[in-house]
Length: 118
Picture (cartoon, rainbow, N blue to C red):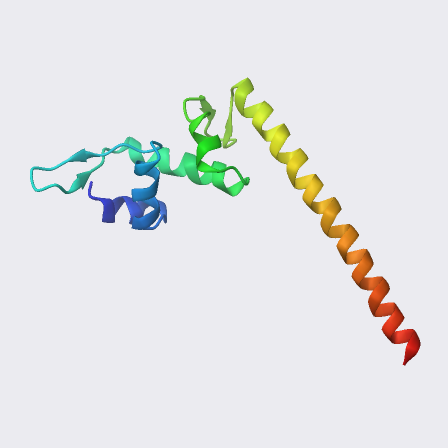
């Protein structure tokens, strides 16, 4: 299938598909005219990439776990590398949440000060 068809079948933009290929997450054959051509497995590959992007992983991180087998009905990988990566990502997200909560608390204090002076 052509890149346009792959984009339609996965909901990914053509630009994203080209990027996935550029960083080594997706492979395409080439027609004699230079057009990219994908086989049916590309749909599952792109959906796997989207799954990982949706949990906050970057393409470099995804590249390290692309070969992990997955449970399709659960949309999750079955390798220890992915488990460890998920743990690290969760810790990063929790740090960000803690930081944002501290900022929100300070902002609320400042708003309270404004309201008390009015």
